[in-house]
Amino acid sequence: MKQLLIILSLFCVAAVAAQDPAAFSNAKAVEGEYIDFTVDNLGNYFLLSKNNQLKKLTANGDSVGVFNDVRRYGKLYSIDAANPLKVLLYYRSFSTVVVLDRFLNIVNTIDLRKQEIFQVKAIAQSYDNNIWLYDEQANKLKKIADDGKTLMETVDFRMIFDDVPTPTQIFDQDGFVYLYDPAKGVYVFDIYGAFKTKLSYIGLADVTVVGKTIIGIEQQALIAYTTGTLTEKRWSLPASVVQRQKAVIRPGHMYVLKDDRIQHFTF
Image 1 (cartoon, helix red, strand yellow):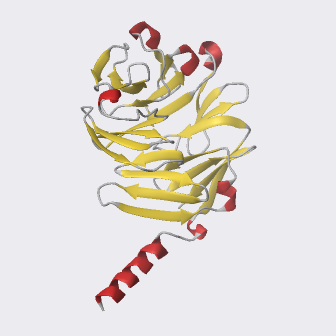
Image 2: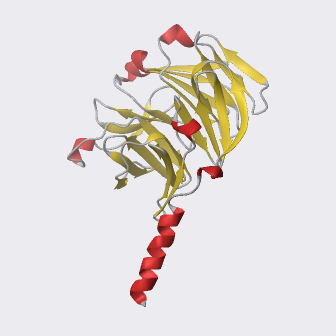
Image 3: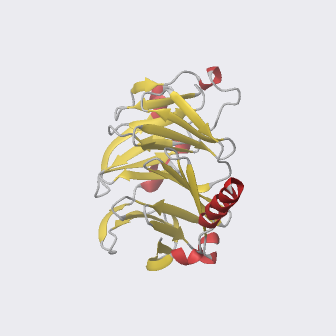
């Protein structure tokens, strides 16, 4: 009887792990040809056009601001709008961070090279309104202020890892900092830089962290893993999501970049 209950329990888990794509419903689309975008937690769009104009639209499609000086520091590498009032533009080729306000006006420019930081793939906003980055030359996770000065840094990763990660994304959520390396997995630190654990989720695309849940796309499935409860859920993706240039995931929402629009799904 005990074995039967175990089998039934495993069957139920498997059923939860393969949700129907009908869980995804089409919402509004933003028409236009864009090469990159992100969406903040209020549903505002940050859209990068082919002529390198960055514009901000509300969830209803109203224009909030335009930033035309995108190419001044070379090709825009990433947009971080985790804080709707403080947008980070990162120019990797110039090791420069441009800070914008909510209307896309320049507030500050940080030249990382002046701080002897030359190789960075990932930056993110911190819970206390500073900036996280991973210094690949020093092999350290660092927190810097708006003037570029280092506020905190971890030990050299070569002292704690046999195989040093090369994170492409950083997230600051609920008292933890997550570094994602697609080839090695998720590295979790506390906000003081102490290493906590490593999760072997590799090869995920369009990763984000919401609370203590790591969300990403693995081929044709959306995966959500919650660290506190150690539970994993999977949903089959609609074909229109599988064929995409990029996806941005927010709680209950997914935004998908296509050739001629950004399609909004709820789930």
